[in-house]
Image (cartoon, rainbow, N blue to C red):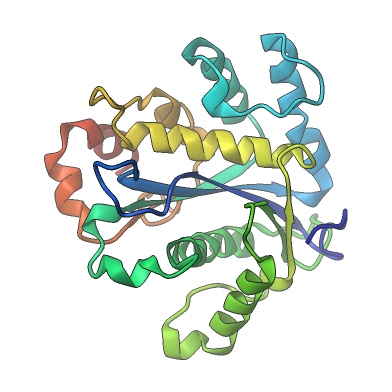
Amino acid sequence: MGGNQIGTGATFVVYIDESGDEGFLFGKGSSDWFVLSAVITRVARDLEVVKLVDNVRKKLGKPERKPLYFRDLKHEQRIPYVDEIARADLRTVSVLAHKPSLNEPEKFGERYRLYFYATRYLLERVSWYCRDRKTVHDTGDGSASIVFSNRSGMSYDELKNYLNLLMNQTDILGVRIEWSVIKPDQVVAYSMGKRMGLQIADAVASSFFYAVQKSQHGFTEDRYARMLKPIVFNRYGRYLGYGLKLWPRDIDITLKNDPSLQWMVSEYQ
């Protein structure tokens, strides 16, 4: 699935990428955390904003048109990249799922189940931001063109069907997506090399992943996540529950007791 279209009449463009995996074999290769992040721009300024990737490429002496994968950069290269993103005209939303805290993890063994759940929470918050930020000066109908980073083997028709299910059963399922913003027929998927905005989404998702997922030596790196605070969606100064959604709710106990997560309490609570 692809094509070059941005949803006709859309006001916003939303780029979505992930970090971590969906497995539950902890201690045997699966990550404790799965992070799904969205980068939101306005259609009118999208091209101008995402060109920050070109600027970073030049700064780092990277080849033109070669995608920037955050995980492949050294720490000293990631810092100027994150700094550039933090000063850009965009907003981010991230869902941070702590898999060991999920009740009934067997429910998430089904294909894409964890990814789809995280997508629902992510798009709820994206839709709130877009709904509240459309101005009389914006072009379009207030909706968003949703651009996913293409996952090999995943059917985006299945994702569209899932979104249609949520839309048709919004009241029954307690879905809080603003459907005037999120339209399933405006969902597309591209490789990172095709849309620069996806490279920014990759950097954001990776930044928050490194801030929560311990390395093989037991350390996290929260500097990138703290640097991104200026562009994280907040409502009335509240970040948790909006630009940062922790899932499941039981994670609150872990948040209070894990010293490696105190950056979240000090910076984002």
